[in-house]
Length: 196
Image 1 (cartoon, one colour):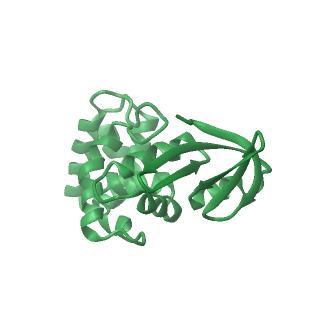
Image 2 (cartoon, one colour):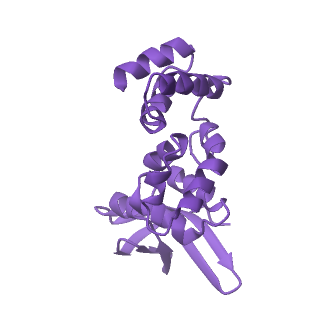
C-alpha cells in the first residue's frame, strides 16, 4: 500500500497533480485545499488514498495526513463517494467540515454541489460521534479528556436554552474544549458566552 509519493511537481491544476518520482509520473486527483498548498512549490509530498474498483484505479492525493483522514471518514458514509468527498474538501476546509458536522449544520453541508439533504443528514448522523472522538483527524483525539464529549453536550444544551443556535455553538465550543481540556461545564459555558 502506498502511504505517500514524494517528487517533482510536473503539472498542477485545481483538480490534478502530476508528480514525478524515480522517472515515473503519477496522476493524482486532488482537492482545492491541496492545490492551494502546493501552488508555490516545485517539490511535494502527496499523502495517497489508493482507490480501486473493477473498472478503475485512481490515486487521490492530499497535502496533509489530516485532510486524507477526513476524506476517508467522509467516504465511509453510505452514499458519499470519492467524487463527493473530494468536492466537499474543495468547497469547505477540513475544519469547516468538522464544525458543520459537530454543529449539525445540514444547510452548510448541503451547500456543497452534489450533496443533497438526505446525504447531509446522513453525514451528520453517522459522523458526529466519530468527529467528537477525533476520528478523521491526524490528531489523536479532538477532545482530549475522556468525559469532554459529555461536557460538550451538556454545555451545548445549556447554551441552546439561552437562545444560541447549535451552529453558532458548534463553531466556538470545540476550540474552547481543545484549549481547556480540564474545564468544567460552567467554565465552558462562560468561555462560550464571551465568544458568541
